[in-house]
Length: 405
Ligand SMILES: Nc1ccn([C@@H]2O[C@H](COP(=O)(O)OP(=O)(O)OP(=O)(O)O)[C@@H](O)[C@H]2O)c(=O)n1
Ligand SMILES: [Mg+2]
Image 1 (cartoon, rainbow, N blue to C red):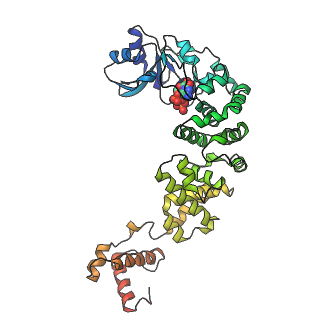
Image 2: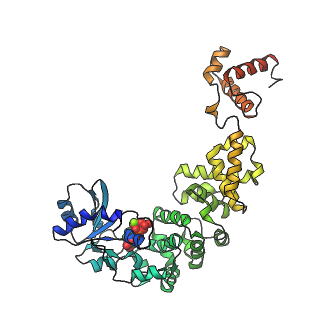
Image 3: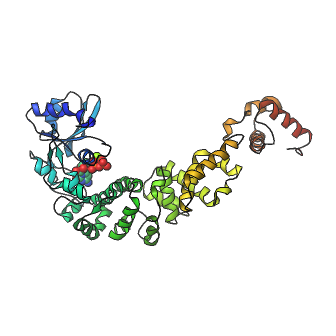
């Protein structure tokens, strides 16, 4: 048994010693079977939340209504969830409350996809009641039971299906795909935050191109924020190798660029409820993207203005759009950066305090002006970035009334 499961074995055994059933479930079991890195290890049990809390000394009731208690075991938090059915669904979202049951089968039955509905006991034995392993072997994403029912229960599952396509490269089963086509509009009942979470994972997956095509094919894209009239542009997304990008900032920037939302970019990104910081950063990247059309366009001023982090991000996206080798271009850019006398203002050998001392003048607008003049002079190699040299250069400047600087 792999390490992440082994570490949680004591927890399962304790529940069993108290007469309850307990299994590993969900994504961890799926990823173990796929030989992918195992994320959070979740546990399902027949014990009720209050029973779980009575057994373990350190627990946090994070989602009692849904039957979830976090148990701190050997310093690691585990979500322990009571077997449940999600009887009544409200407005195509996960229910406000659930019905607890004592049967594993009922718990697995209410899960989204067969690959996510496999349980594993403490000996490593799999309880696979819905053909999950076969679906994994066939590389198929198939709902547990009736696809339409599963998507009506929680419409986010349609996004999850396509996100898993992006992460795993699997195909959707014909029934699952057809049900998404028929139920796409239910996505409008789902909170933007949940959709954004799935979409970010979708953009990040190694098979994102396949996933973008499916968003179009199924019509699900219509219900993504700001996408409804972007079908043409969306087809473009599938033509680029998104794996060349390495951060959400770069992905959202490429998305905005390809969807032609440069003008109203903050409106568009706010609809996705992204953090203001990220929105501002995307705007910065797009600005440099529009001024730097080829790798030779990186002038000293632009590089310095952008700063290394933004410049590399913009260059990565630019290279991808232009079909160039991003790694090679980033290396060139790194070389150019290394040649800059300074890369940011705080590398300047003098500060405002030095200027006040030299000029014997109180602070004021002249200070910022002079600092900027020095900064530009250093950047362009007119003066070395060294205190005494700068002082000398300023004296010369003043003597010649600015003619020599
Ligand atoms: N809308 C959802 C969300 C989750 N699940 C079930 O709850 C498990 C855990 O959910 P979650 O952690 O959200 O997803 P994972 O499948 O574990 O995927 P990830 O690896 O991204 O966490 C899933 O495997 C699935 O069995 C579900 O049936 N319907
Ligand atoms: Mg998970």
